[in-house]
Length: 336
Ligand SMILES: Nc1ncnc2c1ncn2[C@@H]1O[C@H](COP(=O)(O)OP(=O)(O)OP(=O)(O)O)[C@@H](O)[C@H]1O
Ligand SMILES: [Mg+2]
Image 1 (cartoon, rainbow, N blue to C red):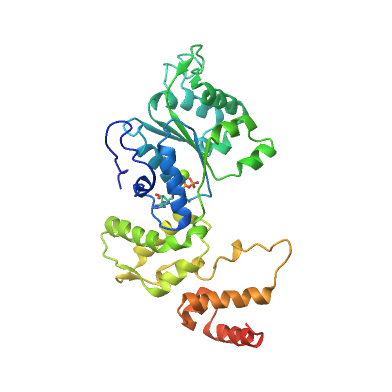
Image 2 (image 1 turned 180 degrees about the vertical axis):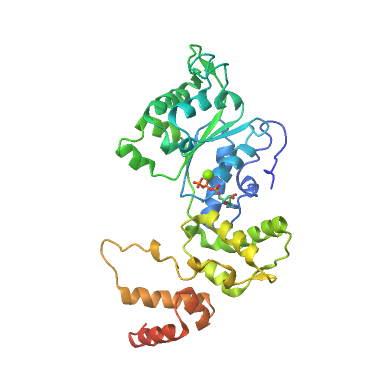
């Protein structure tokens, strides 16, 4: 899908607030968590020069959001340049970013402009910012503070007008504490911090996202799948999604390849999705917890969500019908 092109004279397109948050139409989801992110993005696009820091687990949509910020800002008609800092060795990253003069190093036969110059007037997306080495951190800091830099081997200051969007799936505060990231750079980066929530914090969006990806792969594979059957939907709803939206997209792609009917079924989903229900995200509180009560609560929730249907409730909990019957009896005896 092409980025939503927002047209109009400079300034006139930011017709503020709620309406704008509706316009990030590539960012799907109606959960409170994603709506909150979208309204923050709406404010961010209205301040087109400030640095943005997108923090979130892998696969949560940081790359998509960076594109959307650019596409809805008044820089949209200018270049969007993106670079994955973690993918390049220091010297290469430096010359990609800042460019070099002729003869700056052995292979520098000609002068070459870097990404920052190429993006002039537009946006630079620095992905995996937590991987930048200390020497380059100093140069980036100077650039963020003065919007000026020197090409490698050059002496003239070059000034450009770019918005920097940085992203990371690392905990940058910890990186600062561990001495891996300069504190001054960290504060320069997080002028406008955005926490991109993991998918498990916006489970309500799973059906819409799944439906969207079914459409995407219908088109790509020339299929006519209408959606997911109930068992498959339950599986998706119960899964913990450690790989977030990217994992969901991959799961649907695979299912679409395997599917022979007009609905995706449990059999089309990977076995790893079977009973991995959110278990890994329950953290034992410091003060401990009442396991019996937790079990009763979860049983109630599963029954509620399945409209009282025990087979579906059992599937949500990764139990057999026999096991759930036993646990419900136990829970009733305990007064739950
Ligand atoms: N809210 C969303 N609506 C629609 N598609 C989404 C959404 N969030 C993510 N996606 C899609 O999911 C995939 C993964 O997202 P993306 O690459 O932006 O994640 P990321 O946070 O940048 O991950 P990484 O940290 O691994 O780079 C992409 O194909 C993206 O378009
Ligand atoms: Mg990314």
